[in-house]
Every structure is written in C-alpha cells, then in structure tokens.
Length: 111
Image 1 (cartoon, rainbow, N blue to C red):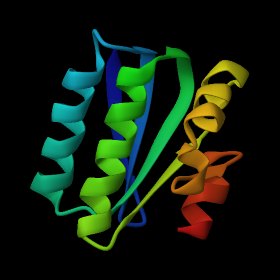
Image 2 (tube, rainbow, N blue to C red):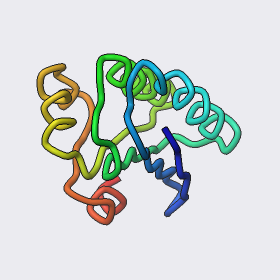
Image 3 (cartoon, helix red, strand yellow):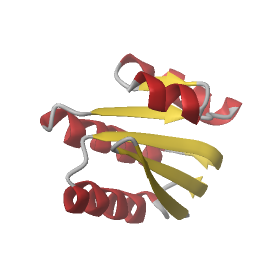
Image 4 (cartoon, one colour):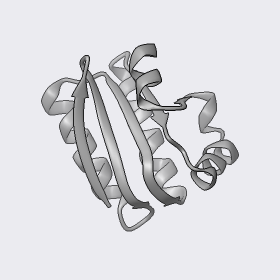
C-alpha cells in the first residue's frame, strides 16, 4: 500500500493506493498517526479511490484513526468508496460513526 498526503483548508487528505489488508494496515496506521501527531491535525479525509480491496484489518485501521481523532474532538471522513469497500463499511457498521462523501470536494466543504 502506498499513501499520498495532501493538506487542504487544514484538513489532512490521505489517498490510499493498493489493498488495505493485514499486510498493509499496520504500516498505514503508523504513517497516518505520525502525520496527525506531527502536524497537529484533527480533521482527516481518507480517499479510497485507489483501494480495490479492504479486509477486517482495514476496518481496524480506519476505526483506530476515528478514535484517535475523536479524543482530539476531530473528525474522520471517507470518500470515493468503490462497491466492495463500501460493502465492508456497511457490513461493519462504520457508516454509523464515519461520514461518507461522494467526492473530495464535498468532503472538504462539509468538514
């Protein structure tokens, strides 16, 4: 998995590229947490446009970032979910706590 970081209006945008599974979730967690801590960020958008597969390890990584931001009174959003990743979000109940926007522009304007 490759991660691309951008900032827009004080919001960290993380573009995830590849598969978010047990092989890559821990590395993604470490890199995202490092950026959140180093830059003192409390709003994060995860862009799933280049993620083809996500398993339970990916769920854990996403929910862990949600909890980390919740402590800072921040927010986490997801954008560009393909049908299989969206299904994982639905089945796991993550949409109850994580906002989903259709695209990056909508997410940035609503956060």
